[in-house]
Amino acid sequence: MNLAVNNTSLFLAAMLVLVALGISLWQKLGLDRDIVIGVVRAVVQLFIVGYLLKYIFRVNNLWLTLAMMGFIIFNAAWNAKKRGPGIDHALAISLLAIFVSTGVTLGVLVLSGAIKFVPSQMIPISGMIASNSMVAIGLAYRSLNSQFHDQRQGVLERLALGAGLLDASIAIVREAIRTGMSPTIDSAKTVGLVSLPGMMSGLIFAGVDPVRAIKYQIMVTFMLLSATSLGSIIACYLAYRNFYNEQKQLK
Amino acid sequence: MNSLISLEKVNYQIADQHILHDVDWQIPAGAHITLTGPSGGGKSTLLRIIAAMISKTSGTLIFDGQPIESYDPIMYRRQVSYCFQQPTLFGETVADNLAFPYQIRKQVMDTQRVVTALNNVGLSERTLHQPIIELSGGERQRVALIRNILFLPKVLLLDEVTAGLDENNKQIVHAWLRQLNEQDHVTTIMITHDATEIAAADQLAKVVAGRLEVHA
Ligand SMILES: Nc1ncnc2c1ncn2[C@@H]1O[C@H](COP(=O)(O)OP(=O)(O)OP(=O)(O)O)[C@@H](O)[C@H]1O
Ligand SMILES: [Mg+2]
Image (cartoon, rainbow over all chains, first blue to last red):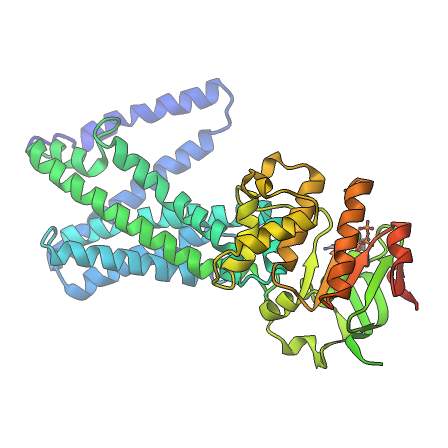
């Protein structure tokens, strides 16, 4: 492998930060503080993660690996929750949706032999699945919130006609699931044409034959479709009831 | 008196705003009642409470001998059907709207019945497949009204449903509503400011500043 990044080259590449800082100062964007904080955080977090992963990979302990995956899933759920303000139990719903979508997807990958149950494969792949599921769920929450607001009158009329809560919400729920899944579907359509995605770029960078690298990318495409569809459907079906009260009235 | 619906000391408050005050009201089965009163008085709020679309803050509401709380709200709303002031249609076409009452009861749309209902309010069969955005305000209002009666409710709560209609269509709809009341025994309460409609009622009720006055 001819990966040449070392501390000296990193230090020199830090000049690139000065470009951003310079632009911020020159154009009076007021972003200099955020840039410095952002850069320091990125460096510190990544160093910690680097050493932590190194340790976890070396000890190769089942429980430690599962704990790390649990930590990833919890963080993803926490972030998804923040995109659904006003939805009660959003944390619990997100946790379940991300846990199931990640679990099922990983299960299929491991059972099919696409990846091995070793920390160096399980942890990064869990992270990719959970973060995509998180983004999908966040989009779905936002869509639920805005649709229940914009289509309030339509929902009220369905209720007045004696519709059950699912019948009154189904058009909204479907649209929210669609919203959650659509970025993954869109990117599946353009993958390789517009961008070379991270997984594949990383492998090519590390010297892997592109024809092998794309096979991993194909696997990633499949797994993200499964993760985002499962995540969105579980989250939406559990969350829509929140928009109604005990008397089955729209809140 | 044998009341189908009876309200006792019904109050409705939002935060510190008192919208309805101690409403007492007896609604006999089969009655045809009009409800009037100044704008902002609380007419729509009162009908929405009776329709279980919102819940009273205090007091009792008895429907068919039992407190409203003892019913499943979904099943209750199929019996006590509220038609909105300025309704909106949903979906793409008129058919989407008229199929909805069948859909929620897991039935297929009875096209014959739907067409008859359209004709009854002065609309043609052609309307069924029209996109909702092409309809006039008065046409929308009538389509919305039909959604409420494809399965006859016991009580029909009509919130100024004839307000957007021209004189001719107003008469058609009003005659049809009278027929629902007289022949099908649907108890109707309609909010209206129309003198002819008021004159045709069995009971005239008025809501002024959240208080109900009833004139038999
Ligand atoms: N959800 C709500 N939040 C705050 N105020 C409300 C709400 N619903 C109704 N009100 C207030 O309650 C009062 C009664 O409203 P309502 O719609 O029942 O009047 P109305 O008699 O039907 O008037 P109109 O003839 O104009 O339709 C109004 O002052 C209205 O602003
Ligand atoms: Mg009103």
